Image (cartoon, rainbow, N blue to C red):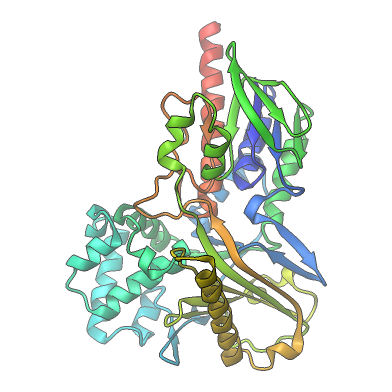
Length: 441
């Protein structure tokens, strides 16, 4: 069975690693960029390791990565974020983030009665009996809730932080998606962990796994430009090669790009429900210091301006040179603007708000900045997980391909869906192959 995987991000590499582990398969991973990893791309500058987006993993003890560690022989280390050093900033004051029962009791975000109510809500989510899962969206649930405005704001802020979207968009996330996500997260003994060494630790091992099978290749800087089906075979044309023949094709790229590639094919109409999906975009502000400027806490979430700053090096010491410090600021972005000028003003304002937050908690940071990178429109997920968007199934009726990636159905949120969907499509193909082989014999 010869397989084409279009996309060399986390999902494509995961699928290829599983498939290449089977001796009866051969294939090619096509990646249009010069590097692998997609939006999990990592690079080094002046001794600092910079990620396009965080390399934080939520609920790692219940994560797909744990299966991959066992099944693919991956080896990596992770370190848990210190919950006692995660703070919320509201109206100019700091308070412990209500991430567990202890911190809920300590936080000033809620009153005493609100804390009791919120603890009860968390217990209901853990028990999988919370009513939220029956509501179309978080907004619908909050509109019918008798909770105080502070409790409602906390729900919005939590969903914003974990789904990387604005509070307005948080209200558009389905109740089912939120309930499932937090059911898993609250049951975790390791809610937020960093992969030591960044995403490259995972992607490099996946590439090594694929390279172990001489019948598998990875082609970078080779985008697929067209695809047809002739006599039961898929014929692919790329930027550098023509008429490549495959038995199966897996798309592992943003759903908007899939829809565009299939535009002039017989399967174009089947992609119609997914082609206008909006992506999750954030402003990312990375700064590396030549020395530790300040470390009053490891994570601060500004509830007033919807920004947060992670002291990445406090959890992952491998991303900085000796004695250095790396901060990553994230701002949730709106995407509804009348024109490009308004968008530019909005992004400039967010950048200024981020620098004010640095000024407040990391004094003299400008004097010690060794590395700075500001990405004003970084895509962290190809599909914003709100009710008006549709996650692409791993299989679509009457379409002969498989689909994986962060815009597809799968476990978790953001990068976890890439891993889980990549693993799922590979297992589907291997099971189908085994069934076909059994019928022949």
